[in-house]
Image (cartoon, rainbow, N blue to C red; front, side, top):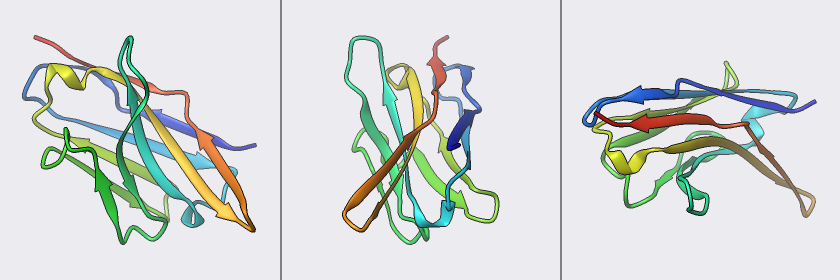
Length: 120
């Protein structure tokens, strides 16, 4: 059974920091590209940051560049999202995603989400 379990969300003041973690089980983690997505109320889910399976390449949404950093530890089956200089508009449910394409088939898994609220 595949599980992606996020943690680290919470309430933080504007300008503050949070570090999200996502622990994967039931998959060969180092074969999966990983990403963090977020969904705010009334909005579509959007990609925040992504990292390749070996961690050699990352990409970010323009809105978080320079403030968020994605990283992974394949020995711990964990992907992280360090969020600094948080803004009210970063408030959303954050989801961990893992994807792998093998023999033309896509394997795509999601976590249950963790709430991040940025408010004074």
